[in-house]
Length: 136
Image 1: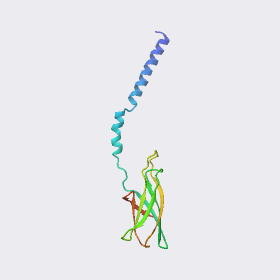
Image 2: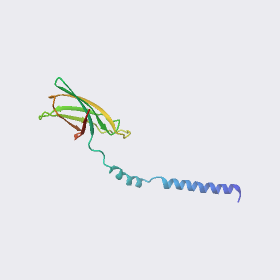
Image 3: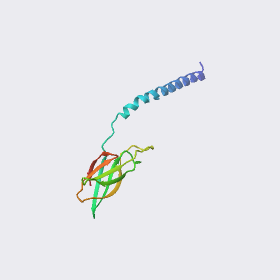
């Protein structure tokens, strides 16, 4: 056996091992489908966290705060209204982000104003869900 034929044989064996290893290590479509349900089964935090600061002046509450959003691409808007029971209902809206964005929780600012009594308690909802609040 000559040197060139031995070299060709070794090169073919190495190529077969590398190609075979590649095919064995690449995930198959059916493997990815098996993974998806377990990833979506992880429960997300259902209670949004909101940090509030309420400033009262001349009958008007100015409410500023931060809401924890799933990513930095999310925007927040707030509306406040006085209920019949003399409570302030603060509705924070965060539309669902449809574009690609790094999923890292981020504090998103918001501000709103409402005319209400000085001692009116504040109830907070984020996208219609009652939120946990802290005051600063």
